Length: 103
Image (cartoon, rainbow, N blue to C red; front, side, top):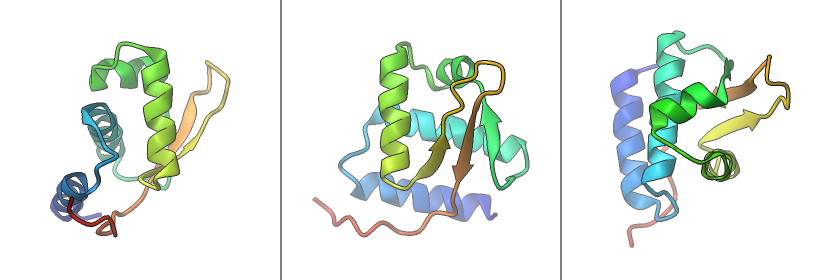
């Protein structure tokens, strides 16, 4: 994983993708930080409260909406566990330039 290339591609995608709002961006960056700390494994488990705290998200509804959006828009793969002791599994992908055109 090339960290700088990934971040540059992310910034370009953020600029071009009108669906992304600051909460989506904050959540993605929090997940990317965890992925980086863990040395970019294929997938990893997260604790919702920890991610919400780092991303500065105060409401569970907002968190769930944004993480599902990122999954639906293929920025991540989100596999909820529904088990508070296990945590949900996340997979981040090497980003490609989005096909979304400038607005």
